[in-house]
Image (cartoon, rainbow, N blue to C red):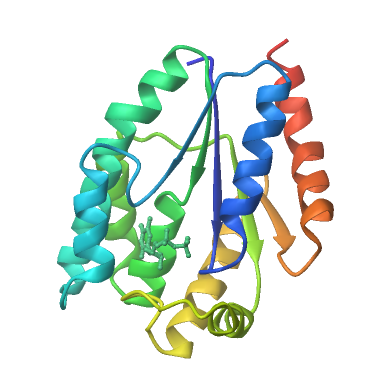
Length: 208
Ligand code: TYD
């Protein structure tokens, strides 16, 4: 596959969308066709799964893990693989690491099982680079309250849940330092973008 697959991870409100959008524009200016997508929600199934997951009633843990994996299976087959096969750059907000952090560490489902269903769902597709925007979850809560935004079903989880999510992300990053770029999300937007572009530049050059 000749395309470039880059994912963004981090807690809620860490600034993933802003940074992935900036990277998408940067890649376009270097001649790439860019597909900017997100999970949950990137595919034709996405909006319905997203609604069930984020705005519906109680979803049991295993059902939640499977719904995220189902959304992922559809998004990878319908959007991501075809884009990579035609040589595009796919920039995606959230991927399997989100399930490992939220369903694995957050919900405390067995990590190896969460990994297994997701590798099955994606047929083992992993990104070349994952940007982790790391921040204290308390900052996101304050930010959301200041913006007057309503929390969704996962955002309403207790502080300890979000602490576990953050710790798991850092653990995943430490286990795969060559795939992850970990950045302190409290830095200014421009500074973050510059570091991300520096990391992506050699990947673009390697493709000529
Ligand atoms: P979203 O609005 O995309 O969150 P944000 O803008 O904060 O990134 O909502 C996604 C929510 O779903 C978020 O709380 C994290 C959660 N999630 C999981 O629990 N597991 C997953 O596999 C994915 C992709 C997301």
